[in-house]
Image 1: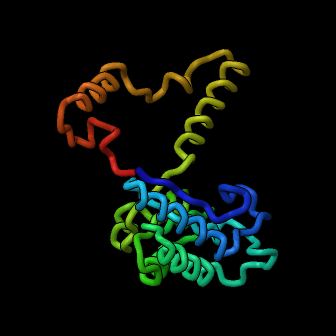
Image 2: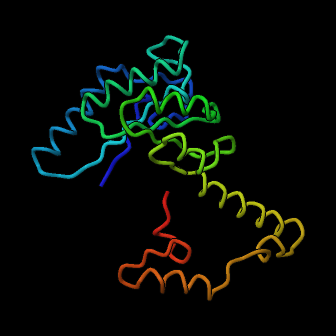
Length: 195
């Protein structure tokens, strides 16, 4: 079991005008969660999010150096009991920056995939421990649904809905494969794929 714990006041970095929490406040939250999990014997992975690449303000001051801010926060959060560091972005993390973050953060680094993110094999080579997709696949599905709805409304046709769709047989095979005990075939069992 695990949690992502954001450090932006907007809760998810969606409002870039909102500041990041003070480091001391966020480390107290992490330490309290770690203390509780140890006391209760709960195996919990704390993936501490550093939102410096998502937000523009930190305690009402402009972030002059997002890299240093991220590394400093990562060190404090790991010291407080976090298991890993999640650095989401909106396209600012190129391969060079990600490699620098991997080398500078003394714990597993998690990034989020997006249009400008290096390919998965390159992220693995750079030393990224985990790649998230967040809400982006769901938003892509909603975009497809919107295109279908526009076609229904404007043309009264169904091409978008009918092109390149997965068959019933293929979907049934996915679930049949997943039900087999010990199935590790990631090509037929979507739930076994790395995310």
